[in-house]
Length: 132
Image (tube, rainbow, N blue to C red; front, side, top):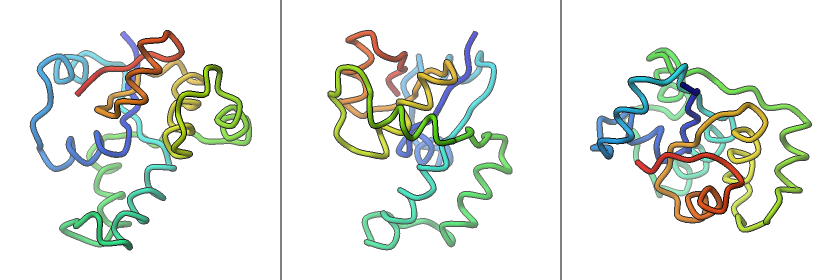
């Protein structure tokens, strides 16, 4: 078993009870922990401030509720941020996705996502991912 790192959209879908693929649900039930990157908090704030995302509560309260529900905050340090700028294969352009991928690679997490560039990167063998 391994731990799972939710990308930002997967965190939203999970918290909001949106349907996930059967394999994703099975992975969540059998994992060693569910994590989210602090970079996702920044991304949520950006999406909400640009009105591209409507949450049922203040963004920080939403984030805190996610953590209170048992999702753990993944550590993020200078090594992860530097690693995000030098990912092998450099197929991922979005900086938040790069941080999420670097976090997963550093911590040995599987990323749960529907993000096509991350899934393609995983298929190339650079990180493990679970399509949700």
